[in-house]
Length: 307
Image 1 (cartoon, rainbow, N blue to C red):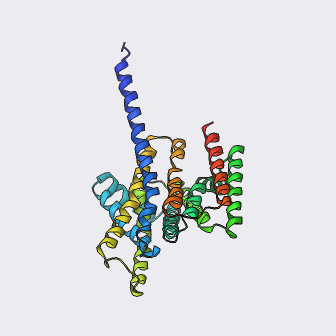
Image 2 (image 1 turned 60 degrees about the vertical axis):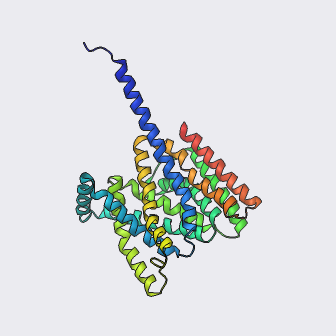
């Protein structure tokens, strides 16, 4: 009879703990970089948001495709998936929706950074998980807890307060949350490896990026190549777009989705703090009330998800 081996059990626990720590590092790094990228885009204030988006897509695709070429299994999976999409219209549809949604999300966020709508962007990032859950209920028939419904109602009241303060609907916040929610919803239906899936997503919108650059070039609105620092920032913008997505995928492999929920508020908090302390955005009493309601709704949601 085989005896109990405590050292083997200890090694297994150490390995599990190590994987969790690695998962925490990957996930926190992804959300930290997403938060800091707001400063990166503001450094490109001389470039139009359309040109920044086009280069994010092009250089992002180049970076992902290069990474994939050095991994034989990923490379094979990519070309297999392309063949499958030729006959699987449903999967192709979900890929197109995901590609367009994330591209629109990138464009709106960059535009918000360039035109000093930092607090509105922060609000959008805060309410994204709540909007994603609402879309899941409406479009996918997900079940909803009473506490989650309460969280949604509190967040909605925060949006109403902001609307009253602005005298208009905070469309940047709503658009950011909605495009991110649609992206998450489409990704639920996509059956592909994270790296392979991202490669297909960027590939699908690459022709749009090329057409956009051609249009900008014809109107003498292209800044790429005009100055070395700007050119370099545009190239690395694509790489910095992909890196946090890859880190997030690696983190997701190692830690539960519920745990990742705690990390997702790093990005909007960094954006919020940048807005106040670096960009000196004006924050009124109604702003504080609205954000307090949003933060309270997040607390309700996080507590309910732990049960």
